[in-house]
Length: 460
Image 1 (tube, rainbow, N blue to C red):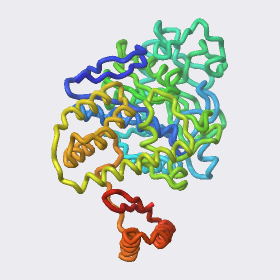
Image 2 (tube, rainbow, N blue to C red):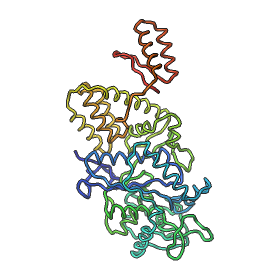
Image 3 (cartoon, rainbow, N blue to C red):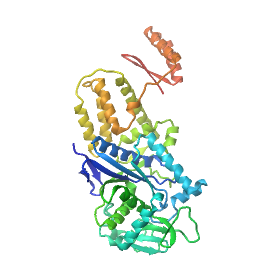
Image 4 (cartoon, rainbow, N blue to C red):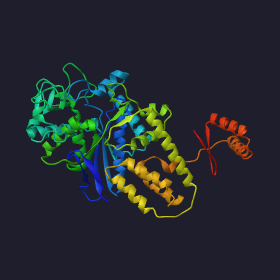
């Protein structure tokens, strides 16, 4: 069954064909570690995790590289403003290096809680400065670099197809409209490859290049490190849609200028997560972190389930009411899985549902449809519990909802005695006592459900 992915470069779904048979190379833009990742950022990493797991589900070997931006990302896309690492340092009264170390660890903790597979290679911008400097030197030899007072810039007018990813109409761009215009830039779309440290200012993170001290531009790190670890031509590059008009556009420009050939075959981008219908961003200070969501009483995997309920290329609106709905669905899902886990009855064939699930996954990572297939499996009478549970475990290698680790909650003997006493009261039609015990159990965090097969309980 062919895997189809939406390629931002062509603006259409394409049949995926890897460069090397049965092997896939992926580069995903990682976090800028000057602050906590917000749940909008984390939605992108979930989509990329689904992509990786779908590739593995299709029996590909995957080599996955993710960068850590710990220098060079300025507060403006126009190569102006403060380095975000320096900004984080001032905000918290710690060194930029300590800020990077703290938020890198926090990010890794977040993705672990969300059942996101770690990349095969983590690469930090600060640990690959030589590669970035060498990259700029090679571009300079090819005539793509010019120098102005604050740094070295890439001359976008030298490329006929600059902006092809974002489909920019360069001739219609007015200076300062797309990004703030830096004095001395030849073209409004030109971007910094290397920034000089301001005169009279000692930065925490700076390196010597061209007889002065400075630091790399944001875009150069991804080009240099992806080529170092994946080669000059690789399969897939991912990120959020906010990377399309500037960051990824500039990555393509500098990389293909250096190579003189196509660099990446497939570009995939995840859509925005809005909060209460509006934009969520750190600059607006209206973002939620994963830890905040957990403190509000939601398991991290409830948030994952919430993300999977929408296609990665659709805008998703986050509200706590919506998350509560996802929590109810996820808890119900776990209850159904627990029911079939302990049963061993067997009947029916599973290939029909395996094919349905694979078809959903291979249709540009259609997680809402994949979830629907999972629910169909749990509801059908054509399969026994043994087959259902086998499919649940199989599907969860992609969905990542921790369904194979679900265990029935343990309660004390006293709680079990109360449940038995209530069951006895119901059989004796002593509804007053039965209701009283139910209320007592609820206060203790145990919820009862009366069914045809007897009473069921779970711990909240």
